[in-house]
Length: 247
Image (cartoon, rainbow, N blue to C red; front, side, top):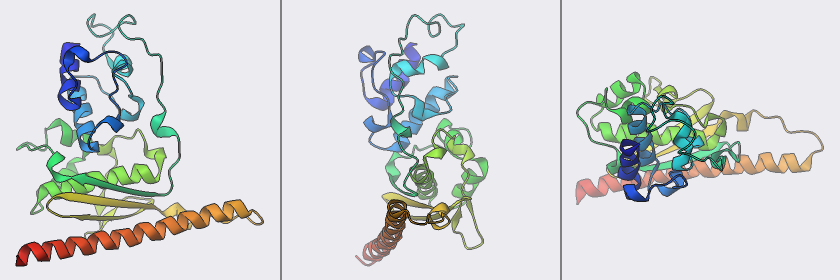
């Protein structure tokens, strides 16, 4: 029990003595998604085997992942699960996802293929891809941002392990994941990922249903805004790199 509390304390900044059943440990209390995933990677490394992080809202929600044979962790007496959080399942997504991650949140290690954060969030092929890049941290942050963007675009991906949501690349080096149009950009400080669900362009517009037509048009409008935002980010990144090079 104490080891689990220490891990939670390390990533949330909450004193171990203050961690109770109702202590929040959901995504919203973290500065960035990477830190949240780091915590669960460490918990999994302790043997908790948590697959759907979105199910965990409070420390008490960890109950079902504790070994029942361990008197210090298991059983039904310690935890009282009064609430079940569906915080992240309120919507199926807008079809568009944008995520920005800071590079300094990516943990440093010399053993990417065995470090819990990397093995929990990237496939071995993704790890190999990033390690072959000139700036691996940028590549890792970029892939992570894309996976977050995919979930925001389609909440049906909520609960999938990140190392099973593999991002591949075509011959031109463009990121690819079936069912989405993806784009990525990064500089020395942050990475941005954008995911556009291909279903936005495939859904038929119902006849004589004005509201549905307006909804679809609204989604298409947001898609155009997202693409425009992407080009803006890429332009800013290019100017930033040129500025840093010249001055």
